[in-house]
Length: 76
Image (tube, rainbow, N blue to C red):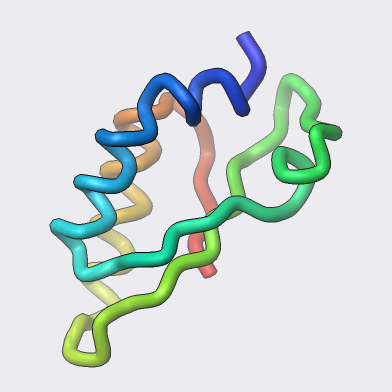
C-alpha cells in the first residue's frame, strides 16, 4: 500500500492527534507529496503549532504519528 493511501485512510486520526498536540494546518511535503516515495521513505509533515506549545508537544506528535502510521515521520 502506498503511503498516500495510508494517509487517506488515517486522515481523521492524524488530524485528531495534531489537535491534541496543538498543531493545525497539517500538510505533507517531500517525496510523498510529489508521489515519488520509495519503500524506505519517511513522511514529511508541515504544521502550524500553537504559540504556547513546547518542544515536548512536537516530539509527542512525532511519536504518536509514527505509532499510528508505522513509518518514520519528520515534522517541520
